[in-house]
Length: 417
Image (cartoon, rainbow, N blue to C red; front, side, top):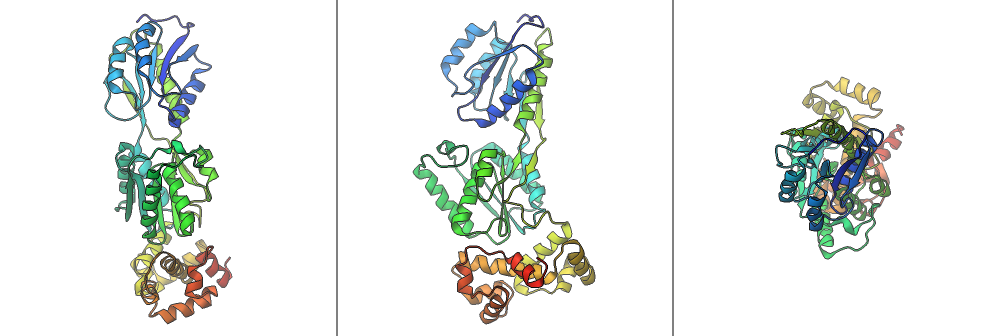
């Protein structure tokens, strides 16, 4: 291929799968970066499903196309044929590709580690994952999540592919297939078994939407009893939910800038290089919203205390026992809770007891005697008296309550609200 003059228009052939909003975001980044730097023109089925007739037309276009920009799901076998015609392939997506291509994708294991680092600071005591069974990105995100937690998540739910084209960008259903309702029923059964104070990392925002909507139907308080974090930060979807969904922003447009930068370097070369390169993009951040924004980000000491109380609640541990177990003194723990966290041991322990009691009353068939033992009480009568004193409610009334915040209830009683 002969090199064009600097001022001559450059042609980029683009193919984005149908309904692939990620590709649209990346392409916006590419265009915005190139806009003031080169005379360019985009051709190809940018907004539609890849079609064989476009591939057939490429032979006629080979003298015009400078760069081919396909996105994942574009048939690799066809791209190998296209490579013979053009040479410059800028592939957006993971997987094995020809060594002569440029390849750009996110570190999905890095996304998982980011989720773990964030959720560990929310004060939750248990961690779960909701993902896709047969998608590599979901597997890698789970792997990074597990590595970041340094422990295995307590609850994992994997599903087969769900066609989310049945929803608007804001998450409203257009036409729900029977398969989707089967998935929601499965999700509801799974969430009924989650322990109190669980943080869930969802492989994308669509799954986060499903979890939040199911939590609302089941009366699970978010984020008091359940924290939910998605991926992609689709603003219309995340902000239309109630509560709004926290999500990891993968900065797709920024990735598009990096792709465009490499394109300019490539176009400046008089000869097509024999080998391409690879860019693994890991510049992402958590956009915090209501689904995780509860008591603020917790310190390690506070998190250790919460975790120990949750794991040993049935033993009814004292402050001195907890302090010794987490490596501090009774006096230091009391002072830390009062001065740094504006709370007390009694409030935090009582909050966990209330949360566990509330969750079990609402989502299990266990007898009150068993619930009392699991929540750190000697018998059902002691639990009932304590509930009446702290909340003004009987166990039955608490189970039927639709809006209940244990932390605020106890803080108001102690005058710390």
